[in-house]
Length: 128
Image 1 (cartoon, rainbow, N blue to C red):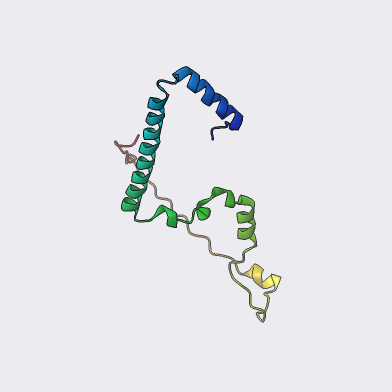
Image 2: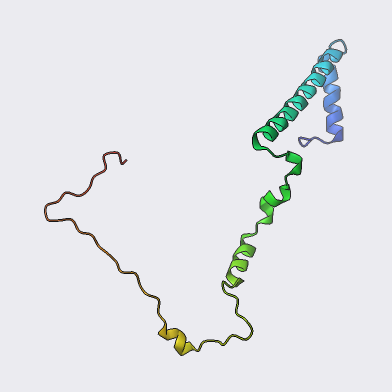
């Protein structure tokens, strides 16, 4: 509660009673009670508005799923590196190193378009 422990709260309460005075204390107590009721009403109204607009009930949401403390980047990277893309079956033959070296991926052909002699480069007037 805002970093205030029991004895500090009692001391603040006593100082408040002395500053406000016994004649105005019931009035300020009623104002505090009305403030708490208004804050509760606003919170329940916000909850209902979220339920209407989003379509889900806040109590039904699994908040543990959205807890950022559960995401450990080291674990995610380790799992991604150790996870094989293609599972190898137990009876499949393993390719020899020489056969793997013969198969090379095709490199894409790079196409370079050049402007004709004397042609101006394209210019975008709306670019910043």
